[in-house]
Length: 244
Image 1 (cartoon, rainbow, N blue to C red):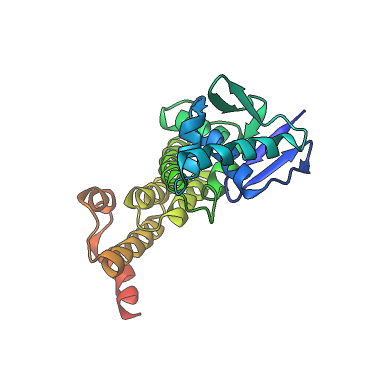
Image 2: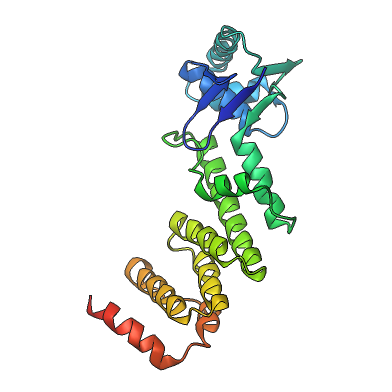
């Protein structure tokens, strides 16, 4: 039986294409196990998910959540002694794209095109969930995704796939507009294509953002990247921007 768990964006669990409705406590349990590396002890799960109650009450809440998970008749959570884990046949988008991102960062060949598209367009992990254990994993995945997109953009640029490289770098810039390495990846695409005007324009966009938001200047790496462009050309692009 195919069970698919979606956590990028919002929580959605489906079995054979049909949505499996779960109460919030059961959703939290499934999400925690999907994010946890390996089996997790019942006491650790209960203590993390129910911080504000006694240990006995937390364990009772965990037993209730496990009972509710058995009701849909779908194998979602497994157990081994005192430990719980997500059933191995549950497909998780977060795990799949995290693995694809790590492969890219490690220099492995790019994944299939569908995975790359999902990596470029994916949302943050579990939007509108604000528990500490979610926030930590959300930031971890955000950084992992950004590094992978930048690495992929540079790889595509080196191979002459400028259109896809630009789209990939733009996805990184859109996700984090103040991230200099994302802007550098996009500028590198423009320079590789010979589009120096676009490179200057992107540099000016970033320079203006840094001044307006953080009162900072671009780094030496950024200046060196754009340094080949004649100063007069830079001034022509920046002058209209300064007048706005």
